[in-house]
Length: 164
Figure (tube, rainbow, N blue to C red):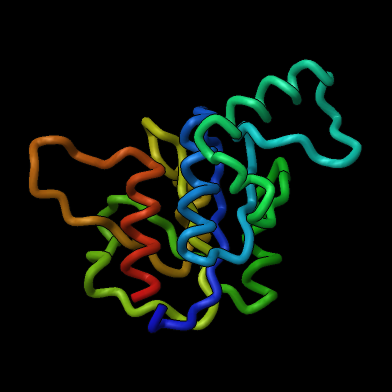
């Protein structure tokens, strides 16, 4: 990596365990310091897990199927809320990955020293109340007929651009 940004991923309301597993693999590959899984995003088993054991085991196994062990290598935490204010207080710039009227093309964005990359729902993206808390919003320029990439693919593209 030529850009020495410290990056945290905030995955809010991601529904697919396969996407979560892919996020862990991608985060490991790009040296992401932590993943915060929030809202209804599924997460691997945690100490004192509040979920029923069979549910925690099932979700952990599904995430592992795509993560292939990266879920044990990348630091993560689960929180119902993404706590963007806490990250801002710790010096992170909240960067939403979303197509909006305010977003700037990813290839023109210069990553700050500390980035908290916020990604949202697979279908509806990041909800407006969270977008309103972002310091910056970046988007991947699309050329084809589809309007967006899969959330885990888009995260990989964004991480590549933010770290090179």
